[in-house]
Length: 91
Image (tube, rainbow, N blue to C red):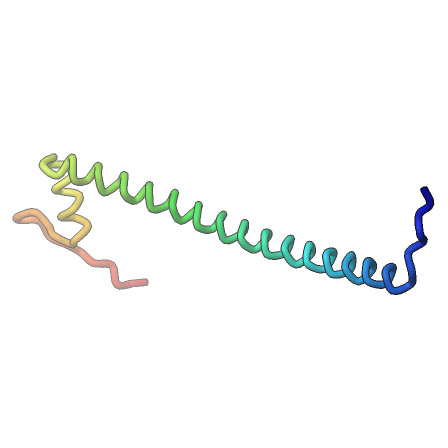
């Protein structure tokens, strides 16, 4: 059984297809890297949000704790009765 040699046109078509596939592969590789970078950013945001949710859950669970109430009052600028508040305006 003898094989017929490929003609010039057939070789040209195969070469064009190979070049197209190589360019497509490089384009897809770039898109994959972009999506992976976006995924990493989103994963970091998710972990930050989970930490914030945990902090809020702890605050809700300890909402009756006197130390927590005092901390919240201090954060909002409240002072205890007969306490003098001094604000540093030098900076």
